[in-house]
Image (cartoon, rainbow, N blue to C red; front, side, top):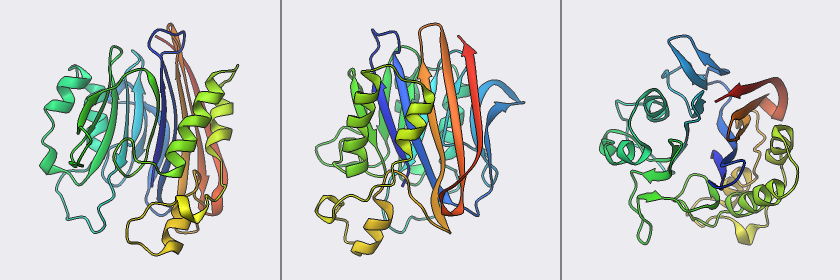
Length: 252
């Protein structure tokens, strides 16, 4: 139940602002965000099970973030979705070209935000009636979780509103990390209707999920300025206990 909030204002001093939570089983091994020795331009966390990543950026200002598309029981696939973020960031094609060239049927359901410095792209390999699976996004504020872009899940709608409010005043990465640590439980009538028990939906509904086996593992803030960028990641252990914090200030 990951969450990615994006503020895209290409003509402003901060063209791209991202606040994202990674939700995962606590037992799944991963490494905190850092530069990858084999790809010195790449800054991202690392899934130590499959080798990919869920979110990252490059020193040139590219960005990509991934959420799984919830489909209930997913068939096994040979390719990890974490390679989608990695391959875009270390490649040299535009975001739109990359999205259009993906072999969608080789992955379980996914959503992707891709930013190449010129365009912000949303793409998914799941077709939803009334939603374009690949879109060139207009300036605005977006919330994405485990359904299509535009789904009115509380964490997406209130999250996008909170990000817009935060960016309207003086803010920094710490403010975004604090915003992501929102553990408030939405009311039942606002929860997704997916045929799941209400207890299941309640558990996964908050922006920040607390659990002993599954929950929010990392909160990430990425702020792209015209001449530099900030990347900050706060990690969490079981029970929502804060562990390590890493922060990078990078020139473009």
